Amino acid sequence: MRIIFAGTPEFARVALTALHTAGHTVLSVLTQPDRPAGRGMKLTPSAVKQEALRLGLPVLQPVSLKSAEVQATLRAFDADVMVVAAYGLILPQTVLDLPRRGCLNIHASLLPRWRGAAPIHRAILAGDTETGISIMQMDAGLDTGAVLSMDRLPILPDDTTGSLHDRLAALGGDAIVSALQQLDTLVALPQTETGMTYAAKIGKTEALLDFNRDAIALARAVRAFNPAPGAVTQLNGTPIKVWQASAHSECGAPGSILRADAGGLLVACGDGALCLTELQAAGGKRLSASQFLAGHTLTPGSHFGA
Image (cartoon, rainbow, N blue to C red):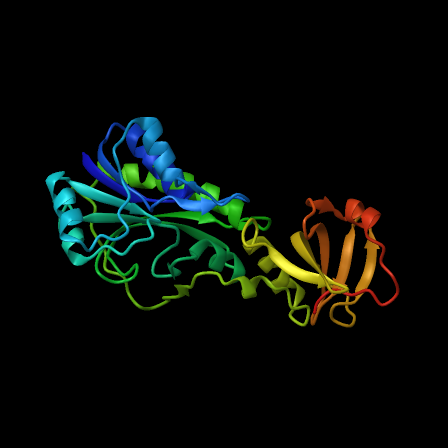
């Protein structure tokens, strides 16, 4: 099938690779312009651009799809379908109408649950036990199009956004290849508004751990914000990132350290306690609890939180 592919991060890169491996003709790859990254803020191509160049595929990086010139370029490809995965630009109706078979989106949730920008983070934060990949026929709304196929995936108790992302990316690659193979027989089912939730983009302030909350919710937050932006707290006024933690039943004054040993730093919460087992001080490396304690002296009255 003749495809225009649009995507930007690693999640989309996996799908592009799968389509190419399956033998589809990728006419062009759309991706976001190179962005500054790293300590030197050097302009860096997206994961999708790097893969497209490796595969020898032509790349387009428009800042918008609204211009007549860009639309004329896309129209000239005479594509059967456009496949979109975490692209980051709005597709105007003119672009949605260009491919003969429309535009298909690979979305990392079981629509209509978690429409929007951060479905993986939000599913973990909410304590969902299941997620998946929806292949959706795109329309002008925000993830509101009819769903062609849905593949389910359990959320494991120790899943982080990073680990769940990788499993969903692999599933998304398989799902879009399968959907294109069955495109003539798949029935597009309109979404209902029942059960609809919105996965808003993650703000940095959300990653601040409030130990007045219950320990179960905080443990989910630590997993949801790993690897980015990283759950953050303070120890005696010093910023600390928490990369691994688990909920326990002990209780005490929120933020107080109930126990500190090689098994972890047990911090009292509004309900229960959170055992911190991997931490990182500003400018330092990720450390196990025992390594962290070797370099940080806890004095009477030490506590976590603002």
